Image (cartoon, rainbow, N blue to C red):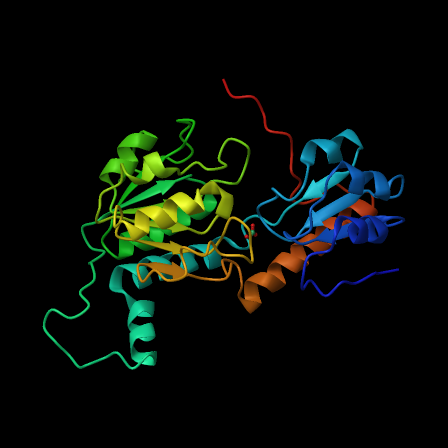
Length: 301
Ligand code: GLV
C-alpha cells in the first residue's frame, strides 16, 4: 500500500511517526525530520528512508544505521540544476537584475544614464568555492566560461578536486581574496554557522556571498548586519536558517537577492530525483543493495 502526502508543509513529528508506523519504505522530503523516535515508530517494518534531496541533514543517520535502516539520497541528478541556479544568482547579484526589476515595478526608473545602476563584470574576478564537491566543481566549470578564476577551499583543508586552473587556498585566504564566495558544503555540526560576522568582515567590501546549500551554514543575522553596513557588497541566498521564515532584517535590503529554495527545482531534475529515490526503494525491497546509500563517513588519514 502507498500512503501519499502532497509534500506541501511540514509534517509534525507526531504526524510523521503515525505515517511511518507499519511502512516498509519511506520516500522523504528535506522538510521531514527523521530522528530516533521516527525510526522507532517505523520498527520493525521500516527498511529504507529514501531522501529526495542530496542533502540529508534532516535525517539522523547514526540513529537509522543503529536500527539497521538504510538511508539514501539523490546525488548527481541535481548537480547541473543547482549549479545553473548558482550561476544565475551570481549573474543576478553582480549585474543587479532583480534590483532593477524592483525599481521598475515601484515606478522608480527615470531613464537611461551613463552611470546608472552599475554592476560588476564576472570576467577577471575570483570565484571562491567553499566545498569542492560535485556541485562546487560544476559551478566552477560554468564560471570559467564567464572568465572567472577559481579558488577552492575546504574547511578541514581536505582537497577533493585537482583541477590545473583552480587554486587551493586556506579558508581564510579564500575569504579575503575572492570577489564572489559561493558555499557548497553540506550542513553538518562542523559547518553550522561556518560563515560568521568575523568571516564576513574579512571579505572584500566589494565581494558578494552566495548560498545555495543550507541556510544554517551562514549566521543570517550577522549577514544582514554586514549587508546593511555595506561590509560586503551583496548576497544571493537560495536557502535560509528557518525556512520559510527569512530574517526580517534582510527583507528591506536592496543588496540581497532572496530566492525560495529553488536549487533543484526544475521539472527534469525533480523527476530524476523522485525516480532515483523510487529505484532505491525498489532495490531494497527486492533485497538488492541501494543505488545511492549514505554510508558512514570513513576516517581520513
Ligand atoms: C536540496 O536542497 C537538496 O539537498 O537536494
